Image (cartoon, rainbow, N blue to C red; front, side, top):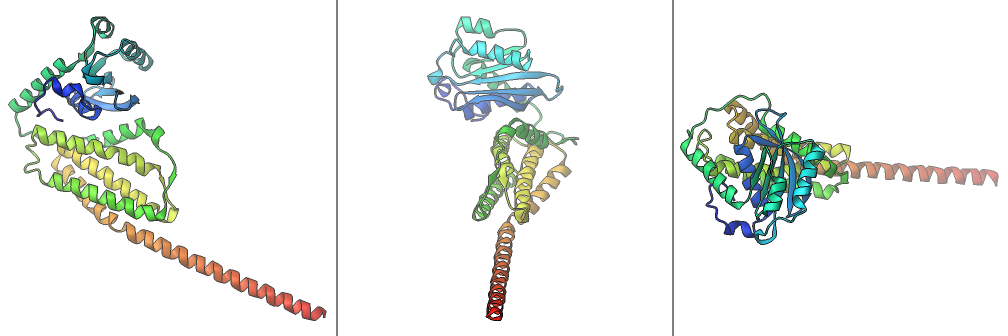
Length: 322
């Protein structure tokens, strides 16, 4: 779902949290806020996050996304939990999104200065305004040179907010090549999509939404790779995998956020180099296996030789005693 799609109330009844999150994120982007870190989450029901203003990082907001069954009213305990979370995080600004309704009593609790409440009617109206603004403004945007790439900020914030999910998982050698090949296919498909953009200086709203979706889909893979533990001799494979996804996210961000064209080209060239390196991972693993086999053979040969020497020495001692 994206801001180019026509919305009606029926779409909200059984909407999944991923599609609903995209709507909330597009509205937050229009408010000039960017995701900072995750606070808590209930799968398919709730996401609570901290977002920062793009213009002023001291301007913080709690973003609460609540999914109800068939668009029913939120339960009476939700507003209390929202206010408790705001208090815990020392926040005064709130963006509350729900696909359901809010009773007058609950609305009285949630309402307040700098509190923005979005039920389906407000979301439909806001998305319509965003669409109209996008259609009316200049489609060709001047690209800008930035000190810190938007993709880097996204990666940093995502890894920081999900660091508790990073585990130490020992990956078997036979799984390294398989994972690298899957990553290669995924990134090549993404690159093909990016190359299909006719004019990077005239990206449509629909194309930008697609770019952001591709970018967010790659972030969880960075957590997976960070969790992998490999033998030191093949740890290079982990670096190649991480750098590939990192540059892919940076490349997408540079396109979507109209960063300087030389940076777009730089990230693309880095990504192409990464893809070439990914294709070498099979060779890295095979060489490691050959070294392991060779070392095992040498060790076995040494052990056999030592055993023979011990037997001969024992035999000499035995015959000398006799």
